[in-house]
Image (cartoon, rainbow, N blue to C red; front, side, top):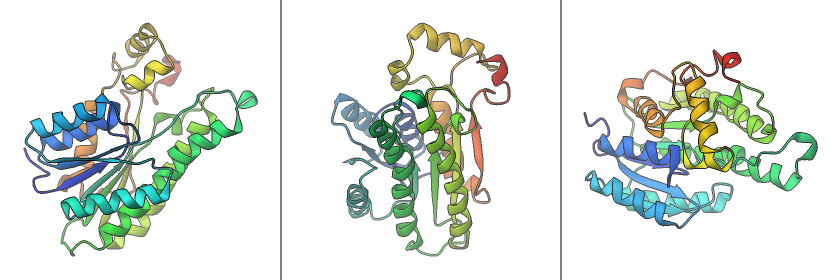
Length: 260
């Protein structure tokens, strides 16, 4: 099934992990992909190659989403290259784990500038260019925010990240209300415990696998699990879905007392 034939999707934080999983899922269904990240590493080249191996076009835009000017330049470059951006997935985030009483203010600011304000920059500029799309009986565009189960759970040593994720969920609902008249869908995905390279900055391999075994579904999530959920929300199948938060967490939130 090629639900995104002749469409272009831009995904932030897409060089690896959840962002890469989203990019590959959308590409496998026909989308051309703009991947954004702020790194220049082998992972960027590998992701571009994997997208192109699926027969799709791929463009890399290096930008820090906390920098409004850089985000504006990214959208300008993407639009010049592909003509129109149909799907935007705001995925980039930073998490610096510290307990509140010990937190360094510069680390709190770094987390908020990317995880909260970066989402605002990306979604605002996505909406601005989608409003200019030709009128359609269906959607003019899809905006999807990747949040976290920690928007709902008071997870220790993660206050700045938790509050940023809670904020962007409410922001996305507000944006959905404002953009409904323009037929632009805005939705949120709350992933739970997803096995990504980034998780290894906080936990050992043994801890990650043990967490997965304790989840109601019996395993950690994968980037592909999140990618498939994004593909649904970004497709015509979800044209009547807006202002919604979808948990992709293997039952983590509803059964968290048995997991923590």
